[in-house]
Each structure stands twice: as C-alpha cells, then as structure tokens.
Image 1 (cartoon, rainbow, N blue to C red):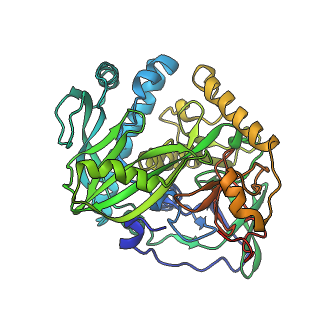
Image 2: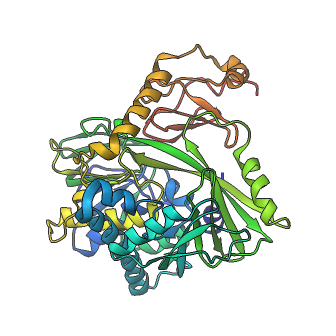
Length: 466
C-alpha cells in the first residue's frame, strides 16, 4: 500500500544499531512525534538516540492526510462541558501553539515540505445548530472560528465552522528536513525495558542502550504494563483516495455527518477520505470502491491515482495521552491516542515531552496527563470497548491456514499475538485486523501495526488459497 507521500518522497535508510551504548534520551519510534521530539532535545544540547523497528516514517506519518489544525471535529463544546473552561483552554491553546511551532521551525530551517496556510472547515449537509454552538464554543476559547454557509464544495451544506490561518504540508518531506544531525537506528526493535536499560534486537543480534530518559512515541505502546494503554483506547481505520482530474479545493474539510467525507488538495490532486470504522469491525465489501462510488457523483471525470488507509488510536475520553508512562516509571514518557489529529498532536507531544525531559514546567498540560481520570467523558466508550474485547476473546473459533477462505467467509480468522483476540479479515486492504486493540497483519501474517509485537505463524502456507 502506497500513499502519495510515500510515492513522492523516500526517506534515507539508517543502519541498525551494532553495539551497546548510552544516551541522555532514547526515543522508541521513528515517526513524526519521535523525530520532532529528538530534534527539539538535540537542539537543547542533549544526546538523543532514535530507535525504529522498521523504516523511518512508515507508520501513521506516511498515511495521514496531513492537516495541521486546531479544528478537531466537534470537540470544543464537549471540552467545555466535561473539563470546564480551564481544561478546554489548555487543549485549544496547545493546538494553536502547534501550528505556530510548525511555521517557526519550517521557516528557521528552510524545510521544503509544501507547507501552505489554509482555512479548515467542519461541515454538515444535514444540520446547522450543532455547528453554530461549536463555533461559539471555539470562539470563547480564543480560536479563529466562525459559522458560515459558504464553502467551495460541489454540493450544498447546511452549515460549516471555518477556522482561519490553519495549514497543511507534505509529512515525509517535513520529516526529511528534521533528520540532519540526528542519531537514528532503523530495523532496531526494542523488545524489553528494564529500568533505564533497553534491550534492542536487530538482524545481527541484541544490544543494550542505557538512557536517563526513555520516550515511547510509536503510535500505540507495545508495552502493556504498567500503563495499560490497550485498555484505555481503541483503534479506528479510515480510507483515502487521491484523485486526478478533480477540481482541487483551497480549504481543508471534515464532515460531522455519519459516513461524511474529508477533503483537501495537494498539488493538482484531490484527497478524499471517509468510511471510518473501528479496526477489526467487519466492514462488508471493498471500502475504497464504496468511497469512490460516492465521490464520483461530485467528480465524474476524476481518476484514482493512489489509495491507502490509516489507523488512529482513540482514547475513551477523546484526548491524547502525553506525559509520564506511569507513576511507577517516572523516567519513561509516552505519547499516544492522537484521535485522528496526529499532525497537530505530534507537535504538541514533542513540545510537552521536551519540556518534561528538560524539567521546564512553565505551562500546564493537565488535559493530556496520562494519569488523568475523566469518568464523565470516558465511561461509555470504556464499556463498549470492554464488551468488544470480551466477545472476541471468548468467541474464538478454530483456524488453520487451509481453512482461510472459509474463515473469511464466516468473518473470523487467526488469533492475535497481542492478547489472543480473534482477528477479522479486511477485504479492502487484504489484512487481518484485531477488533480488540487494533493490531494489523498482512495476508500471510506479517505484523503491520501494534500493539502486537510478533507476526502470526503459519499463514504463509501455500495451501491457504484465497
């Protein structure tokens, strides 16, 4: 699967680690969050080592729609109700600061990443009152928001919230601009962490890295305890088409309607996303074909030049986890649960983690604290996720490679190597997806996404005929 970002930018290869070593900070994960944090800490004079188990930028950073915005869906009215004005202001200020930090860094280092200022729109074809309330909530928090009924979309809208002075970019070109001067090892998998020591496995053997501080920035932590993040969030998939011969849009659009669509442009291409669902939830048919069936009504001359899916970690209360991994491991920090707004939250996470490592406490970020407890916001999703996990753990069915075709027809598959949930077949991407915690595997069982850390066994069997 290739996105337009991976088609148009190749990041350099780095050698696996080949000796035991030490650093002030070890960062686990070579995506946007990890590399941004590494850059900020290196510029502050610390020795930083980035460890990535695969290649750089091949996770969520490569399959995003790359919007940098403080417009995060219907969130600010919810924030005011569940967290109050102070918590909502913290979230809003962090999102706006992230946009400014991107601008400053890109200008200072002259990073050529197709960065451009754009308005962001939250729209609906069905209702306006909810959007009017969201616009008012956002304005109360100091955000550049206004309600409107005017858009450039090829269909009428009931209303929209317009956020001015937002931005978009090419995520992998931006990552390439962060790399000079960083110490990076790819194909170097962190298997265990004992105190301040990381056990790193490579094709050539195992090595140890000693670090004063350890940052886990790999999208979804593969370490289950003591943080228990697999119990505090689930993962969702969404799909994207890159279209030629479709009129580009100047703004960035996100729909609040069920099965609504996301739109933005890059160069002469239109990026259209949608059909999001929980990872592993059975989704009949080919999601890309279903998405194209809708989009071509508005752009009948368009041609699909690329398609891809992306996975997002969604905490039960809807806010990222950024800060200490647990109260028992004060030297380990985590950034996860970006809830579909990874470009903005990656910068927020990088600045918060850098401040914590450097012992700077001038700004409060309680809203993102991993040890928070927002019962009012989290209770419903927690019980939904728990029920889903129990169902797929208890209702396991026998599976063998030679029964793959029959298993797919019946909607079940092999067992996830994370905690043993029964996997589901994704006909759009031809992957095995975990409905409990979102791990994904290729058709022949190779691990694509965590929190699982091991591939499946036996699915390469030639008798597994599809």
